[in-house]
Image 1: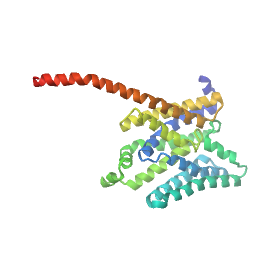
Image 2 (image 1 turned 90 degrees about the horizontal axis):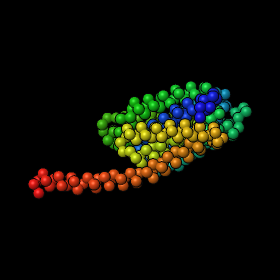
Image 3 (image 1 turned 135 degrees about the vertical axis):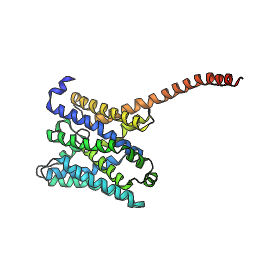
Length: 292
């Protein structure tokens, strides 16, 4: 395993995978709580236009993808507020328009091709450049600052918007901030997992952690640990097996979910047996105390 670190591109890829493994579940736990598990997938479609703009403008595609994805996330929130019955149609046009715009723009860019979009869509460890690492470090730091620094406020808004509004929290501002943070996370993961698969890394570790935990803090900690584990493992496996990193990471995350889901019933039965063993003695102690 240590030979991985002999290659500069793998050092960058593993660092990027580590940061993505931390940031994605940290945002995903709020999206799962709001029943918006597929939001990251829609933002990924929109971000393709930003990737294509990066090629057209001959600049780092991560930054242009961030700007376009953030604008798209704000648009998603506006549709959610005002779209009412026709909101789903507006969102569909926004998502597919983002993908179509990316294909159109990439073909207008000098030397651009749809193959460049495929790399962004599904990830590639060999494309993580030093400039990408710098961008990922900065953006991941911003994501974690929001997710951890405002965790109480975001939890309140995701749990019950009406209650949060009554307590005086700026609900709409926090919703917008969470949407933009999700957009930033999607673009952070672009090089490693890919725009179309990052939503899975935001959701599956959280869903897996929820199988065995109950409290918010414990669920967050376990989901981040699972995210880091599958991101690093998937990146390493993709190097040795010469397979796409994004698909490998997602499949490992699903495997982790399956293992924990299988473990949960057994753990529940074990807790029930222990409770049943304690119950008779507890009843007996109560009878003795009453003099029965």
